[in-house]
Length: 144
Image (tube, rainbow, N blue to C red; front, side, top):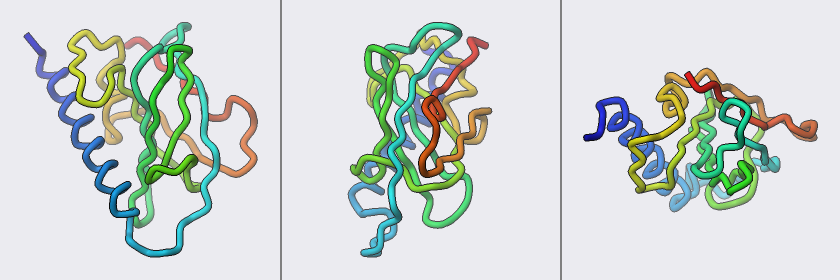
């Protein structure tokens, strides 16, 4: 049986995945001018161990149009973000959400606390800047 918290996390992930696909398909705001993208790669740790599957999503805190960037987590815990299908993320401040499953997969035993599954609840905030130092986009998640 799937708990209410798991259903809520899955529903949020589905909504954000659909929003990302829609934005990628329409190019965000339809304007020909695209913001410069900064490469964003990092490593996700859950406690002291690398998270070996899932995805990371950045949601810009302010500004229009809303910007979503998403990327899969590989078996070493490493992710690389894409915005509208292109590598990188526009400069700005982002709420970070992390999911332990692939889009469309149900993971009722997710090791990631629910708080990391929603831009409204996540404590993770990252500022994307040009020429960021190594490790600037690494994520360390607590187990509770």
